[in-house]
Length: 341
Ligand SMILES: Cc1cc2nc3c(=O)[nH]c(=O)nc-3n(C[C@H](O)[C@H](O)[C@H](O)COP(=O)(O)OP(=O)(O)OC[C@H]3O[C@@H](n4cnc5c(N)ncnc54)[C@H](O)[C@@H]3O)c2cc1C
Image (tube, rainbow, N blue to C red; front, side, top):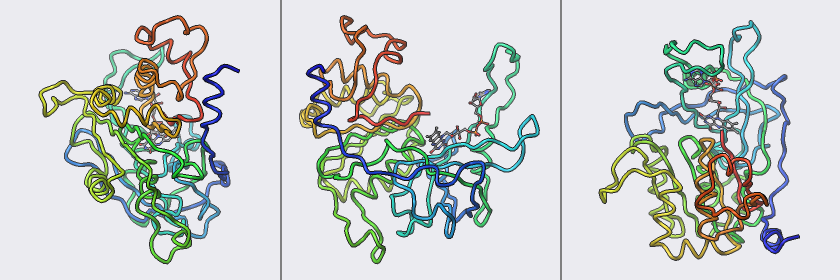
């Protein structure tokens, strides 16, 4: 075992046992839309909602952990006349749900709407008609009281450790990747509603938490007012935004999450120190590919505890790694939780 591997093992977080696949997509349970609201900061070309689903009395009641996801099976049939397949959505609630009793879970669906682009060699390259994703639009169209078929829970790694105070946290989100972090922040900082079972044992987390939220435009920020408010109330939590397609207030170019982090590390010595400490855990959720720049940055800065680099890349300077090399040769360790889609 190499030295870096043994360091990683010592610092690995202890994750809780979670329940998975209690309800299979082939035999889903019926929940009910409890509420649906836009959770965007402003008007935008995207549409993202916060949807609460009531699962009272189903086998899913009380079995979720913050950070897991669940399945939604939309009504109707696909092009072959078969029932639509399940789609996964991250839980945006803490482990005790929106209500404190695990009976209401929330998620953050974004409508998939785009000009059609060829996906396969046989697709017509001249077809630029509107592509409307099946499940995201179905889910965003639901009204309060509508039934919804759900399954789950899914995922076991993207959860908070059993001893939250033993770690500091860097949360990296792009777009709807903010969903699990809403649940995490409620769980770490806000606590369960008074009188709910979890309220008896809950303790506010005193660790340092940094969240970097990446979006294309400021109006695309999700849960923005609530997160800002949370940061005001809790000095151990810092909320950063990385907006990629707008000029920054200091005149600089827009940035992706890893570019923001790189700039921040130049001036925030404490964050750099935390990233070099084996207390630190990184959680990244959102667009597939968001982790690549982050992995490269961490290695360039000598912050090695979060990734395992294959021997083939050992002699190549990190700054010269290609996207393909990072995809194939760099893997997250137990201190880096990744949920990208
Ligand atoms: C663990 C996990 C958690 C997730 N959490 C969330 C979440 O919290 N919120 C959220 O919104 N989503 C989330 N997703 C994504 C979600 O599961 C769906 O993939 C997403 O909502 C799109 O589903 P859809 O049915 O609307 O699209 P579909 O009808 O399934 O269409 C998607 C497919 O269409 C194709 N396609 C895409 N764009 C085009 C185009 N322009 N032209 C032609 N074809 C195209 C692609 O092949 C793509 O696979 C998550 C996914 C995973 C795996």
